[in-house]
Image 1 (cartoon, rainbow, N blue to C red):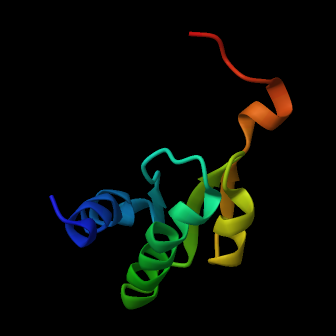
Image 2 (image 1 turned 90 degrees about the vertical axis):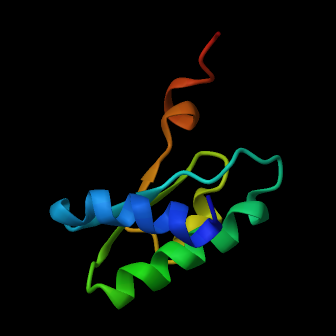
Length: 83
């Protein structure tokens, strides 16, 4: 699966709710998520979708810089989960 097809698949599934979301591959460096967030923002603009759910505790700043309207920050509020 290519980068664009993975993002587009998520966008198509979420389009009915007018919110698109992505969860990039886990990475130690938050900047590694930027390309994923940027591409989702571009796809959302192309399809007139204004709500972007992207970013977690680890990379929410990058997500906000790339246009996130929703972020998931559970571990910063509730702590790390145990396996």
